[in-house]
Length: 76
Image 1 (cartoon, one colour):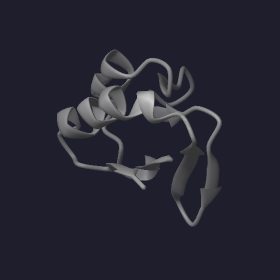
Image 2: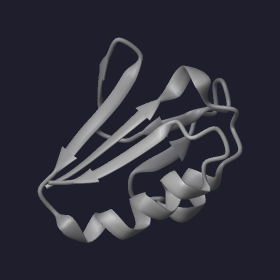
Image 3: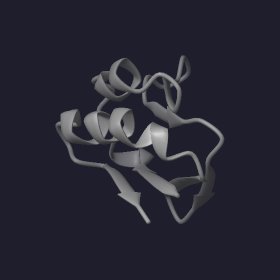
Image 4: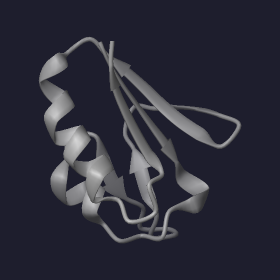
């Protein structure tokens, strides 16, 4: 199980997450911020839980590339 969390309100719109992990991230055309696809929002945090462990590497690269460190990726 892979859990990805995005703190969207702190996004600066650098686009690294969408470049490294296009399966899970897109850039919003409305405000230029990152969107975590298929996520649920709770108190400003957008989260997805995916049983497919193969998404971990690309999501982890996106999290490490984020200059404001608002993406968290965990494998449980």
